[in-house]
Length: 247
Image (cartoon, rainbow, N blue to C red; front, side, top):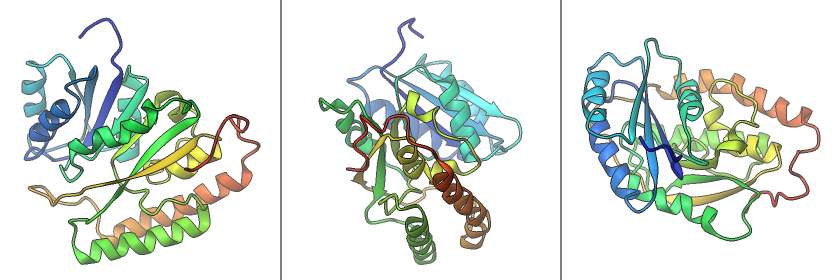
């Protein structure tokens, strides 16, 4: 690892993704070949050999850092641990199951490269042509309609794992479990700008989803109500004078 911090830190939460994870890491490295980067994979209590393949692969690449939670702490906590360990000013996240194509990462980073975007805190990917089951797509669509009506974040797919954000902006957000599904609203709450980009999606090659529709609903309702409460109780955003809001 070089002493200079990388430009970009990619944080990947993964749990029982031994089939997909190494190929995914290689794709991320290829997508960022012309930029300085590091990849941090947070193994969230895997029991399928994921830690072993990560340890072996990281011994050959100094830009890869595997971290491990002995017991699963959840996706938001895994991401937070990875961001805390990161050194880049810009953070990119994507899911460890391989359904978020890494070749979409440059699309997320492009808005930050434009002049006059100092107030831009988050670029949120929005999946086009999702390769999930009909039931999962419908469940997500309904959940996003309810979320948008309560939070007014103007984002149709805040659950997409492909995100790029400023490290400093992330640590201004209130932390709670499942915050990764409410980041646009929380960024707007703090006065940071939010942009969206359409990204592609692909089917699973292995492993299985960690939640069904009922499971997502049960964990999502209290968090949605909590996020709405946080927005109502927020004072003036600290970046209100320089933030442009959602674009």
